Length: 264
Image 1 (tube, rainbow, N blue to C red):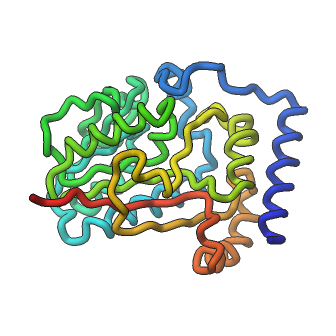
Image 2: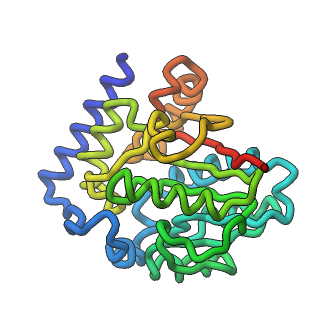
């Protein structure tokens, strides 16, 4: 409880300070409008502090690698909402082949600096034949779609594109903790330009509503806010690891869920 209250006041104080300093909020464009991500593409990699960004990327893609196991070698995967290809480059180190897809053309173009195959397309109308991919993953992408119906369309499309027996790994923000919901809704959009504060968050309890089956595995992690200086984050990391193994792990800021498409 003390940790949660402390996080709340840290987030509130940081948000107020940045607001009073005149920080520029994102332009009020639609969450489904990919032009915002085209606009921020030149600064996208710098929007999240590099140590946290890289640590989270490795951790999320470790979930993907473990979900695939020995089947990763030679498997064909789709990075849905690939951004600038950071996640796909990590997965390819495990022997998989990854196609990157992003709704923003500038993001997909930047991804080609890291991976060979990347293109721009809408998650709600994937340009692939049915049962193309051995695995698909999506990292903090689906909450940008404007509403549950649009998210269901994207989920149906990725499920159509997945081979029977294939894995879908969903990485999303966990807003079960009201402090992180407050942070993501009011503070993060001020500090960064990635989100607007109007996202449609996907909680584990929403999987059925999206047409997804119960997950094979669900991991919840990360308690430290991204505005902490790296020296402080390093000092608090042992506490964070303890929280991730405790009964409080359900309040972590991120989660990863692994789904399997049934084989006939």
